[in-house]
Length: 294
Image: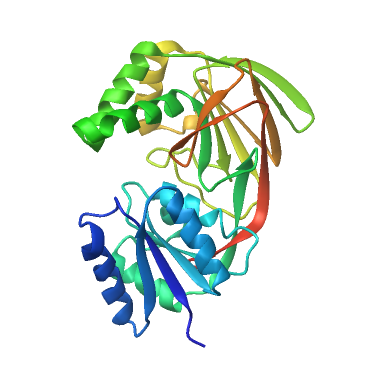
């Protein structure tokens, strides 16, 4: 039976914009003999569109964009029969890379037309879904500043500016973390909770070997100061990050993070949210069906 496929493309994705990109994607599916319904969407309209397509009985709903777009659309498909498809049209595409989804458009479309769904895990914090990670501290603040400046100076210039500014400001977190029956208290500049574990080897600091092991990774950058962060960045090019004393790591299926602040800014798959603590993380094993290589 022919799949009923809908495609939701981030309006800001790719090297071409608007209906040109939409037509390019539609044509790629037509070359596979598959008719799709493709639309452009941004912000909250992406989730509403995914929900509407799911209710209309589409068996595959494709997210065309970066990790933020994929995460937003995936949130409407967790626990559902409809499968997520991914067209990696963003800058980094971590989720697609970890699943082995081809980065070339034509190859990704071929997979969506011929591949089978597989079950992967998702992470949840206070009811919000994430596919890659949730971070507090330096990275979350860097993302917030980057988003503010990107419309003015461009994406990569905003990334460099935000990174330098965060090294100057260098805020600290004071947190209590509870997991596996233990409780720890730390002063740290950054904390990351990941959906499944990172490999943390040279050149693979954001790569995961599996997305179906039913585990969260907890990574705390210790109080090493600005010079320590710079050393860590240099060291990570040469040897395993976990071997560096600057990073403390744990594994758990549930983690509760309680910071001192009444509300926390955190980044979920590169998007900023403000949540009231405690931050309650858990893993949802096999709760998302996605078209990906076996």
